[in-house]
Image (spheres, rainbow over the protein chains, first blue to last red):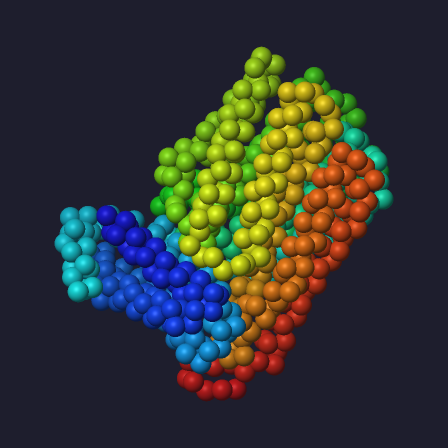
Length: 144
Length: 425
């Protein structure tokens, strides 16, 4: 349940990045900036959903505070830093840098997503089984 | 159980890179064998042919796949390989010695070298399976992990049968089951180890890295399982010399065609449209798999001998295409990742580690190698040109990996590091 909801959100974020990349390679700079801005916003929102709600609920339920959630937070920091670098590169019209940093960001982001989808979210579904629906509702409300 | 979730638990760069750096060295050896003996290389069971096949599948393909497994295990498997540096050193050393021994044993028809090869390859591959399989069976499971388990189990079977055959070569006496064992050995190697691992990884990588529609869950759940069961039944049928063994090949072939069609569709409709050499390798590799299956079908239906080596060559090139695309991404990523994680401020971006120009040149050389080698499998004089192209391609691959490592070493030695206290040293 959490797995499906969060996995769909990963894919929605990826779609915006693909659109930004496609627009920039077609020299549609304004569109690229707009799509990247959306990608930047929804990806950070995804990290916030995890850090402010999901991870805390999981840690409270399992008592695992120094485990996988801590590692995911660390990876979020690294990804946030890459997103900032890409934003600067795009705003300063350093398009080659944008694509160059984007290559690393995409591999790192997808490795991060794989770990969450294959290990962390299934663990969360098991740990939060009775309250998973309420949690998803809470996450939906965060977007409003 | 959760070690794999930590970047700090990622395998050291040396654990992965030692495998990748050895790939082009064996590749160059292979092209020398092909280039100097184009007429003998495609004769089934000729010592030169057997030497080349084993250098290709062990020294190039398995070597690269072991490197990738060391990297992927922590991401896909959820826990990193214990003492990755030490284990990679031993596995790589034994695999290299074993491959060299086996190639030499065939080339020089030397019984003692078959024993040496059996000891080193057996130790290396069975130890790898023993090291990684328990990690894959621990914790959560998913489709790619199931594929990795099947692939490693098949590889262990391949090497056990290989040891049996090596002992026959060493004693120069062949049992009544030699041909059956040989058939099972290469079926499990080509399909169970190589194709299954590539398909299992494709289920993850294609969808996530190229932003495509997901593969159907039925495909992911049952496709590889049906292949594994078909291989098992084919082995049973072959050992007992039962009729209609071709039906298992047909079933596996149909599933592989399904994989080709679904992967092509996903890649063509991918949302990331940016031109990328790795996607060209995927397209070309999938095309080569189709050529391999077509050639094998023609051989099976018509019995025209020429198409059998062509099917094998196309299959090897399919695996090589996917591997080259993967190495082209993973090498610059690992250099960037390890330098960035260590806090080097002047960490180069990926496209400055292996430039786009060199990545494209590698693809052009690979396409030339593949085309000349495939035509050469029907008309032998072209094999020599394929071998020259292949030497150039592997030399460029070696240069790309070597310069990437040199850049890493230079940055580690002279780079400016940003530490936790924001002090610059």
